[in-house]
Amino acid sequence: MKHPLAATLMTMAVSGAFAQQGDGTQVSLSNNIFKPNKVEATLDRMRGIKAPPGFTVTPFATGLKNARIIAVAPNGDVYLSRRDQGDVLLLRDANGDGRADGAPIQVANRAGAHGLAIRDNKLYLITVKEVFVADIKPDGRLGALTMLIGDLPDSGQHPNRTLAFGPDGMLYISVGSTCNTCNESNPENATLLRASPDGKQRSIFASGLRNLIGYAWHPQTGELWGLDHGIDFLGDNEQKEELNKIEMGKQYGWPHVYGANEIYPQSTPVGGLTKEQWRDRSTPMVMGYTAHAAPMQFVFAAQSAFPLEYRGDAFATMRGSWNRAQASGHEIVRVRFENGQPKAIEPFVTGFLTDGGKTHIARPVGLAFAKDGALLMADDANGVVYRVAYTGSGAAPAGAAAMPPAGPMKEQANKGNGVPLANKRAETQSSGVVSVSSPSFRHNGMMDQKYSEYADGVSPALSWKAVPNAKSYAIVMEDPDAKPVTPFVHWLAWNIPATVTSLPDGVQEQPRLTDPDGVLQGRNTRGSMGYYGPKPPVGEPAHHYHFQVYALDTMLEVPFGSDRDTLLKAMQGHVIGKGEVVGKYGQKQKPQK
Image (cartoon, rainbow, N blue to C red):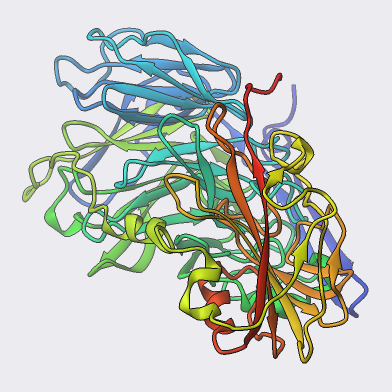
């Protein structure tokens, strides 16, 4: 038998390690690995759980093993995912005594089951690469699971996907990074995706998010907030966990920038970009919390039965650290908001760390408000669902689970929608002409499938005749036949040198090109940078893809990753010639998997 201390503590100090790269960076770091040992969640140990005066913390259900994400149906039914068991459980408290009635009911089985969402009497379930939906039956059990999405990116280091419906009725899906810090080859990694409820359309809503497990919409403002996991191995106190206001098209720093726009020392952006340029395009965190605490599910207290002072605040679980000398996390935190803005993050329920921080009885993950207004927390270590209830004086009645206002999300999504093609807009007015052609397809002819996202997704070759006095060229590719976003932007590129009058097929899909050197690329409607090929719905008539080339009398001071409207605004008054070549593409049959 191991000595108790040997079983509870593993500490490894790594000092004098250097992170280096070819720009002269040298940083000395000291790192620790410390994993508090799990001990049984006995009633005696549970008595050590601490909450503010007037609150009680009791077990709602026990013996659930790897309890992860919680979703509560309008009738009060509690659904719980278990990643390691690959299933979803149904828990009920019909008699209202604050404890689940009897044994849980297994209602779904899917390997890697994790994120849950409920809408219109349907339960949505996400695994590593798939999103499923099932009808909720009157008895709380589920109908057959139907796959809506089956091609989310591979997971790597962060396989725990989550999903939630926004006030705009769209499905938001978090996809973590494959690594601690790296340049991802799939632009959908380290992002928040936005998808139609049927899964047929999706885009990258925001990027540079290392592992965004928890996010929610403020009940009064409708703005989206979330807690992102910080980078590992920067020491005990870095990187802090990030609270971000998440908005469409914004980049939140990872992997090259973190926290309050601090530069990560080891990584190197692709395409010859400097980390300072990456920083200038990144949105810094609004607020930080203790490093390595590991934020998980995040909810606003709109429907709580807590005192009114908690309304408008948010709560989040912190699963707990493994890489600092003194453990952080293992708690529920309160995010105080005033007038829609966060003011502080502070511990709310603690005591899951025991024996002076050497052991733990819980690693908090799931978090949701029950129908009665109590807060439910799932522990994936000992498999307990805890109930945090206010039993003091001055409790507010439980509120209805109403959606926040949809305005902010709809406004962001509709930006640039329903406008003319770029070459018909005032920003590109010019009497000059650019003669444009493509070796890859004839004007108004069909494009080969390899240029579509149904196949290789490579850009076709383009060429144009030089325009006298041009200092640079820009490309805007749009599809005016697309819906619901019209026109759909497929490609933005600018600062193509005046000496360059052609591009080969297969241009790199990255923010900056090194051949031709210095060409910058922008954010397409899909939300990625660089070329995104045709992907019209199967069976629709062929769409028209307008490859528009603009001759400019200047180089543009427009940062990489900019959207079409930003680019066109900068081009206004500098267009000395324009032209286009149009290709068509339609997909008759659904591709074979």
